Length: 169
Image (cartoon, rainbow, N blue to C red; front, side, top):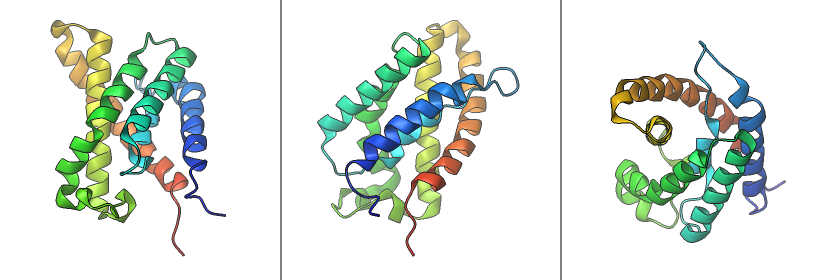
């Protein structure tokens, strides 16, 4: 079975959103950490596909997550921002390799991939928790939640990426 077909990406995205909404959002590790694994959508989306379609999908995925979790469009705003800024992050992380049409994240060295995932997760969480707090006086709480939730999200995201990506035999 070919897992590179275009139909598998929306299926993976919908499954990630459902797992986030019904499993990970119910977790409360150490009383306040709920991993946000849906940010790996930014990792699994192909690099040189239609960017405007990706931004539209990111908004719709975020909006559906907001509807399921009742979070006042925070996920939609953050996913929309991250989908917009993703090429800039990739250009920074992968350099000139990103400019090639044949570039795939899965072919990059492991250290670069993990750094990219960590950067996406930390930036995603920083924007999310900043919008959630919506106050400069709570900057310490934003930083604390960003790093604590980011570390746990990074671990769970790596586990899920290994489950979702195809293996070469």
